[in-house]
Length: 231
Image 1 (cartoon, helix red, strand yellow):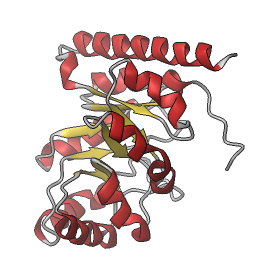
Image 2 (cartoon, helix red, strand yellow):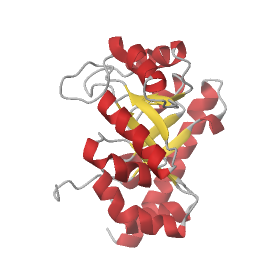
Image 3 (cartoon, one colour):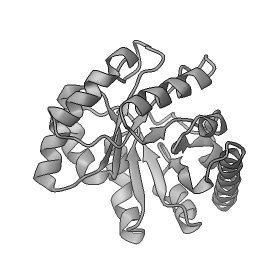
Image 4 (tube, helix red, strand yellow):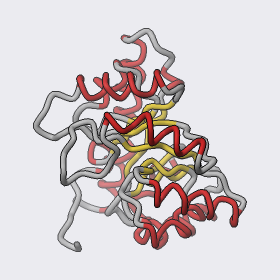
C-alpha cells in the first residue's frame, strides 16, 4: 500500500471511530462531547500522524517518553493546540522530560513517581493532568495500583504530595471480559471524587463508553497494525 493510501485510510478510520464513539455515547444517554478520543500513535512516525492532525484531531497518546520526545516537539510547533497523553509506564529518570513534554500523565502508580512529578511540576511551573493507573486485574506483570490500595494512594497523592488527581486509568486483562474492570474503575473513581475515566482501547472502547469512560485510547483502529520489529 502506498503512503498516500495509508494516510487516507487513517483519516477514514479516524472518522469511523469518532462516529462509533458518538453512537456509543448516545446509546448510553451521554453527550458524545463528554468522551475524548485519544489517538494512540506509539510506534508510528510523525509523517503518519500529520494527516490525522490535518484532519482536525488534536488528542494523542504515546507509551514511551523517549519516542515521544523524538517526534512531538516538531508536530507541536505546527499544531500548538494539540494535547499529548503519556499512557505507558513512567520511569523515575524520565519524569523531568515527561512533565515538560506531556499535557497529561496517565500512569501515576507509586509514591516515588508522585513525589518526583510534584517536584518537577513545581520546578517547571507546568501542570499536566494526572491520572492514577489502577491494576484492576491484579496482574503481577502489569503496572498500576492494586484496587485494594487505590483509596490510600489517591489520598497520599493529594495530601502528602499535593497533587490534583484528574482521573483514573486501567488496562483490563487481555483474556477477560472488560466490563467488570470498567465498572470497578468507575466505582473507585466515584468514591474518591475523581471525574475522569481513561478506559477502553481499539477492541472495547464502545463498551468503555457505556461504563462512563471520559477518555478512550484507540490506536490500531485508527493508524492500522503496528510494526514492532524496530524494538
